[in-house]
Length: 234
Image (cartoon, rainbow, N blue to C red; front, side):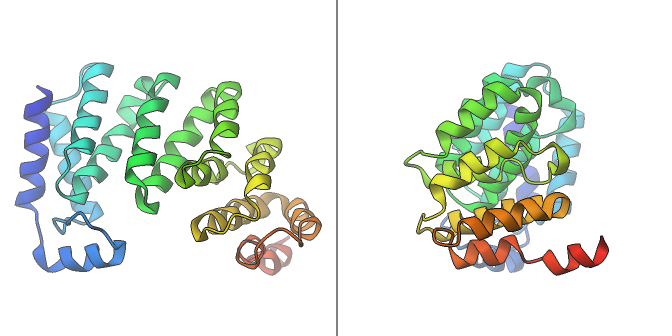
């Protein structure tokens, strides 16, 4: 069943391919893997149609389908569909703490912002909200990992949590990365702080000010990007 469903998804993506768009999408993402040229609205229709015909009846089939699409992908949209299925509302009950290794595999092998940010800001955040103690421990481990994308994930996994943000966890994940030289880490720090600023600007301004000697200009600029707008709307 899984193999047939995966085959149907790949065929549907091929049927909806747009070669003219494909090269532009590939260039934008700087992707070694080619694109079919299937943009998000059409891709979502493919997923909806296939799952309506062949719903994934249990957690094992769901996980196998996600990993089959991910590991054997020949086109980038196949991996996007894997993430769509991983995050589909109908499979909420399948997304328990034991799926973290699957998400970790996606982060490590995906190793680019389009994959990683989708997992971190949606799937990891969801697990953090459902299993706060276990996930906080995992994210504190990831913040020091040799893999840069796991570090980025730990920093941005609370994007848009607003008043529910675990500040201790957020700053524990940011602090050891403040001087990290990588652009994607510095950008992540700025993004995480900018998100928090909408609900707690004083805390963000104080944090940036206290860490002026360590925080990069990029991170600080991104963190306070909306400060004037936030104050004006208060």
